[in-house]
Image (cartoon, rainbow, N blue to C red; front, side, top):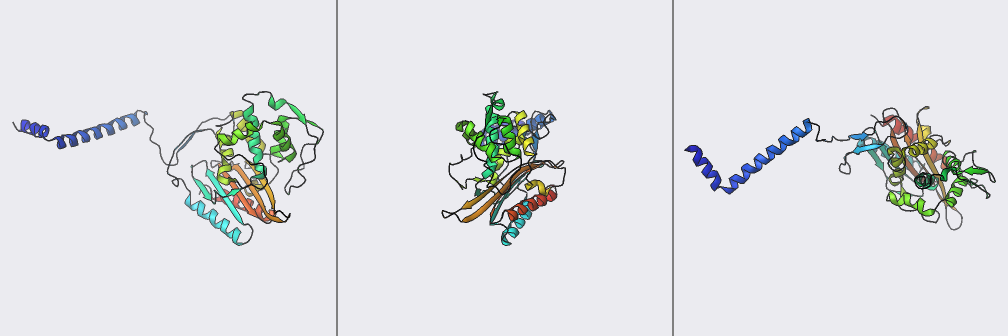
Length: 339
């Protein structure tokens, strides 16, 4: 009799029925989630979890399989950010730089560091990397392009550079496209770069930028349009092996490990592999007077168990001061990245 009265009360109380039904549904959902997790059918992400393809054929790339999406500042390494910010402020206060921007991604933990990372600069010679990417992307539709040959008959384009390599292409000699790419990246050869730019369809080059949602370079000098954070996209797609065929992602990074400009490499111990690309620019006013100099470097440091991407862009009056800032900051990051 008591049981009948309880059932009757529940049926006559819609609110109580709804509450009981909701509780039952919630508990049942928890049970299903628990069961799915136990059976491996449900993946519950953990903070800073990064899943990559386990492969050994291409030692310089590490294709990304899964990276958790978190709120904007969730993975910010606040301690290292503070350390880097103090360094930047000290160099600016000492008149060793007018501005410095830093963007860093710790591939081991998924954490990142940003100091003035959205400040825009002229990437200068760093734009050789998207030229290389455009050619390697072109291989998908034009497999013979890298073996095609051409020669250069103009003037040496490297004479005005402050940091320059002695190993550049020679006028009048024949080079394959692959050889030009190699010289453009390993030696930061402006002559090879100019020849490659004239040889490729502009739309192929611009597609690299638009595919990544980046602004296309303007045909004008001293345009401040890329930040350290945005420029890092080029290195991220190479390291992740997500835009080019893995073979060409690996080759692109391999060429950058052979650059003879110190930059970020000068701040890490000998023997540590660094794939980097630097850029320099002197900015003059309409009367030909020097206004500013810019020096940048972006690269992947393959520190054992703690590889990371570091992009530094800077502006000042003295190239030697800016170069020392980059090498000193590189050392600071290397010593603190996994603490």
